Image 1 (cartoon, rainbow, N blue to C red):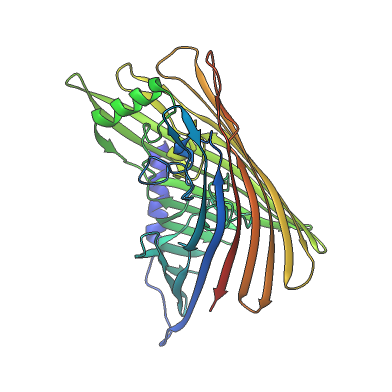
Image 2 (image 1 turned 135 degrees about the vertical axis):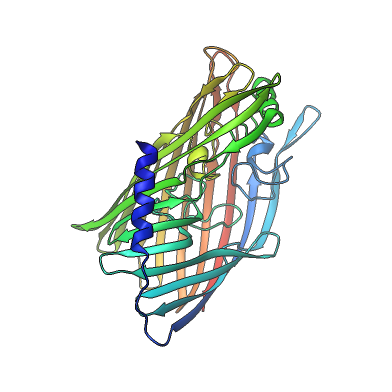
Length: 410
């Protein structure tokens, strides 16, 4: 039934894509945005290297700070670093309109200094709705915060429980506030993240060496509905992803199905100069569903290929943002963000892993001229601790930053 539903949806999209009448001349509108992140960033001595980019060639939990906690023998030390970065979400693009056909192309700046394709899609307004094909933000996308955080990322509370899945190739239908899309599948592995204890590390390392193939027979399904009512805007949406891992266990094939899903809701409410934004999410295996945007150890499906034991992680998050527009050019915003995850061990019966993280921030958005923005920001990520059943908890530290985002749109 699930595959039949996906097939019918794909056929509807295909038959909708009939030739469109277009005017003789296309209208082009170019745009750009340059963004810098300058900050002091600091990690505590008990912050694990995995959470602060130490000991890994790429960030494991989304954090891009150069600060990293390191242990010398038995002595643990924290670290302070200055960030002076051209943000990776700096961009240059163009919007094109040609009758009822349009499109967007947008290039960005990677951390390595190379251009990257952020957006590349075409649209056709066929009257009852719009068909979009290409790389775009998916329907499951509702950002309520302006938080940048260490490393100066997208500045929308990403990596801290935001309703967001990235920019992915997709076929999408838009009917007003309702959006539904078939997207490129997410392929995070069950052994993607290293745990800070030996049993789990051994299992994920073994899985990585024994997996011989990965089959994805269905695209990722994403849908949402956004509407206005009373003093605010409201959002509800969901995402589902599935694929199969194939392992070589003692010369025999062993398959493991990985499913991940999320349901989310959000709102933006205005009361004169004040505003209140909020979002909540619940689901299983969030990284398997939506990628590396969830900074928790218990955020993926765990699998032990030797015993065929599989455990889904449980995930919840909430964001509460308060803002005050002092003048037309000065806005204050602050918020708190919470993430919680839990997953059972696949090596020891009765053992599970739980972690809560908290983020607190305060920022001021100052626009001294049109399209010019300076955003000083102070924030703290409290990684709390990893609670391990029948074992001592693994205490984590904090990551603190004070920075300024500089942005000029043109």
